[in-house]
Image (cartoon, rainbow, N blue to C red; front, top):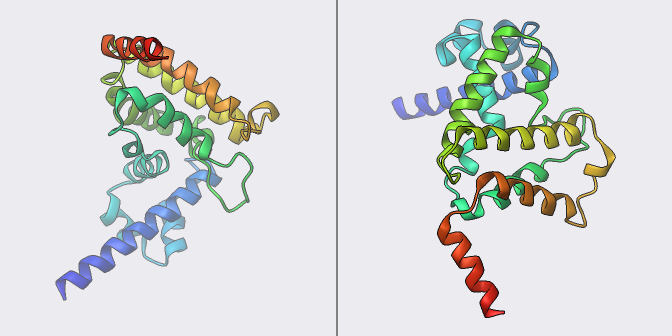
Length: 202
């Protein structure tokens, strides 16, 4: 009985999170209310409070869910550029109205001081800090510039739909993105030696 109750609670929590993601992606942070999110799921607003604690915490969870930093944090530094570019360009630039893009919540929330603070903290905690440990030399500045490259390309593709970035079939966009990221990630001495050895073998 307790196990089934826990499963039901977890399922409802996931439904609340999904409803919140849709709301935050479609309207501004200020215009999104916990009451509206609760109504979307069919629960009372107190249930949302119990599940997430506050609107701020729910927003932070929604941002984290759309970014899913765990996708690349286990990647080896040598493969990081390819992994990041693949994840970035796997998002559809042209979407249906009911689909949420990776950058929708960010763009809807930039005008809000409170939401911007949460986005700032999330960028530092979920991306810049862990990625900085994978650059050589270890550098928060390098990690922040990696984030800037990904955000810039992502916004131009998914939000502004800039044509030269939409056609990725020939692989050039990913190739150029990988090259940019590799410069920022840096090459460890053993990576340089390995590439030199590969060159000698040819």
